Image (cartoon, rainbow, N blue to C red; front, side):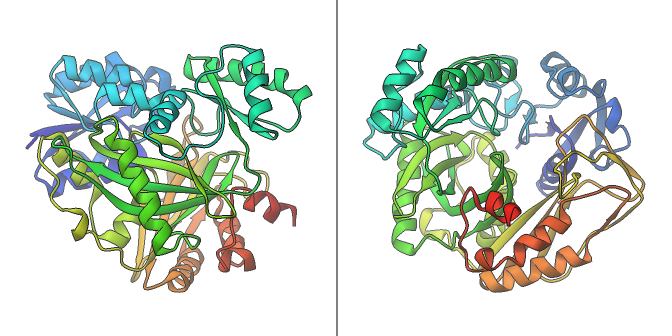
Length: 446
């Protein structure tokens, strides 16, 4: 087992990894920017080292600085968390070349599946269902027009190297396609350093379903059920749950089978998430593979009892999966609400000093956060400051616990999205499980 793991991240995910390492008897190193010197994850680690100024490009995404920190502290492995360098194939490759283990998939898998257009091609060649669209990257505007003509409007143009809603444009009619194509390319180039885009049919009212998979170096692949991540704003998830209220046992078996087949096609290792769109007729289509731990991994842990971070570390150490598919039992229902430092009406960031912080607790409630009273929410990073996760015997109990937890949660000094989540949980359509990727748009309009 590794002796020392450097966590190339910050906030709640860094603290989550530190806790898993402590349980495994592994020493930890926290990196931090100058803005995070007093952060909870820094105090929780065995060692700490500053990697630069507040700007993430000069600190948390600064590959030479992060690798220097690993060398100085003698870390033999790096856990990237999510975001920042977690899906950076070059970073994983450099780690491999200098003998520091990257806790995640190989650099080849990150590069291959990070190209969404190529991932679609691979899955389609296996005869698995993919969202109708262009066969690969769009080389020109004319290629975009040709693909849209075959698929039919509306369509969505997506960055091949994209994620998080960046480099995306929805096109409802042909006369808007050229402008959308150029805008998507420009945003993709600015955000990801790669202007390649592809095109898919745009489903008007789908669900976003993802399947958690985990694979070892011996070719064993296991799925841990599906998550429903349909409640989103501008392709950013707000609330997730498992199991999906729209997925019955027959559909679950089929969509999870396809997820396993998709990652087996490239001999994938470590944890990953296979994402699908589910239409109103319960037809599902492959979208992409996320080659990292997800923000919402905790709800899967709640219903399976499997610590995904520990499994990541063991698999990176060369160990085989500690369980088989038949050992995985899904128990009850789990919901996660992402709490962001944002105005809940305008969705504008709300950094500042937290003057009072009191997290909820009790049976079936988990809070993943690195916040506390008298701590500054910096304006330099993602606005998510906490995740509330509840677990119940069924969906109704999980919702009831989440309502209670949100009522207990006290964050003063800044605005948060807690009031928005309370309203969503009280919405009749949500309570019936009638949600889709445009749920929030309709909810706010009403």
